[in-house]
Image 1 (cartoon, rainbow over the protein chains, first blue to last red):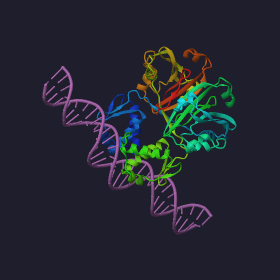
Image 2: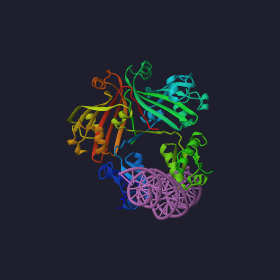
Image 3: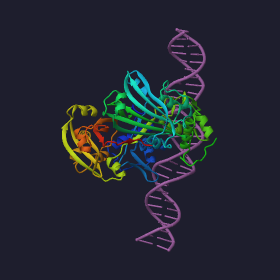
Image 4: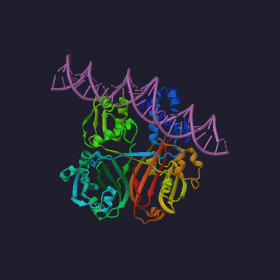
Length: 237
Length: 237
DNA sequence: GCGATCATTAAGTTTAGACATATCACTGAA
DNA sequence: TTCAGTGATATGTCTAAACTTAATGATCGC
């Protein structure tokens, strides 16, 4: 067999990815089966082994294949598949929905790290941080409430920034690239303050996204985003 | 410069990834900067261009670099970084928390697709589906309520399975590999039924995960998972 | 029968070279 | 001035070959 030059994914590696995926979905190769080795597939598809290798690595990354030296490549038995989603910049998210973006800083002050934040950022309790609360709006409707703690020890330049002028989200994205990020989703009933800031009623279920980012100097920032009731976060395709 | 054979990621490509990432985090290369081209980096690192190419592609995938033919490679200005998380099998999730897993099928029946489900699965309204409601438990405490619709047209074998015996989640994972999946997170106040099944009180904020999977025959299944109050979903590292 | 040893296998990685292709930048014509 | 054509350039992709490495499984000695 040679590869058909079908319309989709133009590269040979991509075509092999799709062909192998199809074989698995069609159960031609079933969960647990060992599939032909790279050399055989290279002959079958009429390409170099490196090309087959690239394709199979992509599928292994996706979680569809298990690969082990000497043992060969097997179709994953319990494919704990991965989902990815992009963390958007609020302003872009609002604007891409066709709304006019604005934001309002509710509070900005220096403050020692409370226990929960300290533990999340792996800093000693009481470490000096900057605490910022912001409401992000689309067409003057509250869209997201941001409760952010910034660690000046990891980003010294932050001391001289006035976040009333500049969006903290964007300033940090541009000035404090990170090495690692934690991200968790949860749900909470709106407390009185959230309800007021989001212009909704207390007790309403809110989707909460918590994110902490790190560079080699330690935690940069930890942020808790509360979305407007009914908001959904969707993965990429 | 040659690569130091530091303890971590042994492959040359991986070491280049880490070195370039460090340069970006240390702001040696700033947002928007054009970085040296593959050929120059290959000389600098003392490797073949293909190796540099592989490393830079990984960083581009991560969202740290923008690459364009002829234009070169630039540090992303607004890195809309990606997060991935693994979709767990409930039983494994419960067991990895050290609890004993059990599940209880609350209802199983054939039922025509209601409008909302039909639209989510891109099926005609009223299409014949199997509707299943299950409670998943850890140490006999409710952990997750599953409300699932299965499309027999995409998985004919499903007709003969008794989901009182077999966990639908696992049966589908093993017998119906999918090509594409939608996934959304949201928050809802527990209704009377959720509250009763999750052993909590009505109105409590619940994290909701909706997932629909597809193969080449169409939508396989659409499931709505409600987690017990306080549950968090965390991304991979 | 049992365990230690060792050859074999299949994936992992790298290399040098080649060609493809998108796009930038410049040139010259309308 | 503007637009179409053109060449240069950096990334994209592939190849064939070689070497590395983890793990299997067969062999051999006890």
